[in-house]
Length: 280
Ligand code: PAF
Picture 1 (cartoon, rainbow, N blue to C red):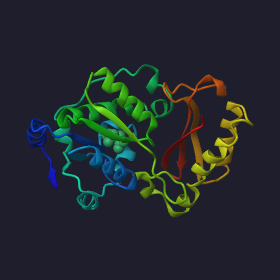
Picture 2 (picture 1 turned 90 degrees about the horizontal axis):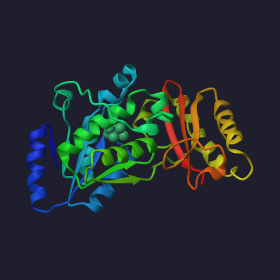
Picture 3 (picture 1 turned 90 degrees about the vertical axis):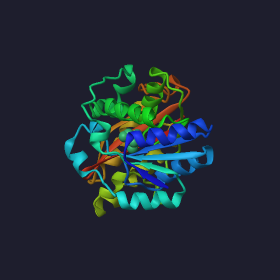
Picture 4 (picture 1 turned 135 degrees about the vertical axis):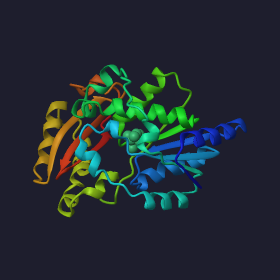
């Protein structure tokens, strides 16, 4: 496994491999890797000849500068973990390498980024699209892997690939959970011990809510979920949305869509956690 820092080096190595008809799988990450990332890496290894993982904490997707400053960074541990996983290249660029000058591109996602994370984190998805489009242009993968925990991010990236007419297959991978149900996230590292004990209530509530679909109307279920989580003094729901899983617009009735996703963001102490489950 090689650790690369320069764009030109990555481009040149991967151009040669592509010319040999080898398929390239790509897993973009911001580091602080956990088993969720490793599940993406393992799938990428099974499905491609060469696997590249990028580690880059992208400043343009952080609308909150304190969040950027506090974002966990564990580079040595990440490199070790990836070495053991069997990938071929890590791309770990500096900020200067990715953004030699400010990226002023604005992406148009229609209604897709006007709800949920997009509404609560202004500019977040534009920043995600900026960095992912740059990384895609550098790596030019055949397939790229993303976790379903960031459900809206996946929809945005699929839309970006369509907008830019890229020939990249976007592959989504299921959420990986801790034994107590908490969705794995790099941010879990930042939870204070007492808050960490409360955090499994998020998934527990979503799972219990799934069983109430026939019993409660959409709006009543939203209220029930919010109340159940807010009962814990360490947790506070920022939003819970029941939405059409294709266009992410909120539904009012269970019959409004064939496929309904419940997406939640919760303040857990000082940390913001997200999760989602299908309701239909
Ligand atoms: O999901 C993430 O970790 C990030 O948003 C991504 C896709 C690596 C872009 O910085």
